[in-house]
Length: 147
Image (tube, rainbow, N blue to C red; front, side, top):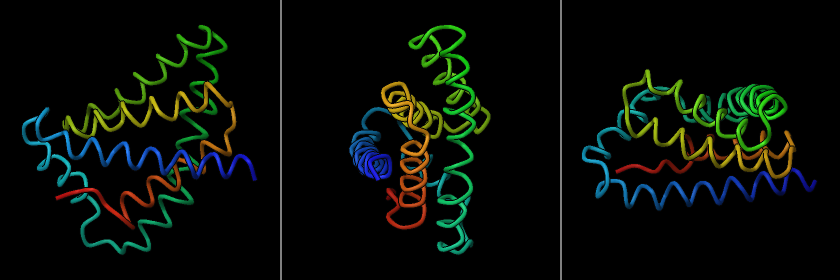
């Protein structure tokens, strides 16, 4: 229950961090609103229920098992906690470079840092999965931050 609570609370914190970023982004990155719109456009025409279910039950758990449970854990064992954490963040953000969307890359850097720190702190994959699953399902299907 503690892992679930921590994951849920961290998802709420990350959501509001993204909301604050949404308010500041237009002042920092020209075209931010258009780029965010491009991210949400990818799900256009797809049922919000389907998006929620896929993100909550497939994407969130799958990404956390791979990115934190496997990759970050392996890199921290090989290079030390801090160096492994930093490498994992840059690899996570780096795979988003191919989207050619600066806001998506920045979002991946922020979220990857957040979840990477949570894993560095707790080493609790259930908290990770809960956080990622709730955050992504809510931000893309329940309460999108755009406009």
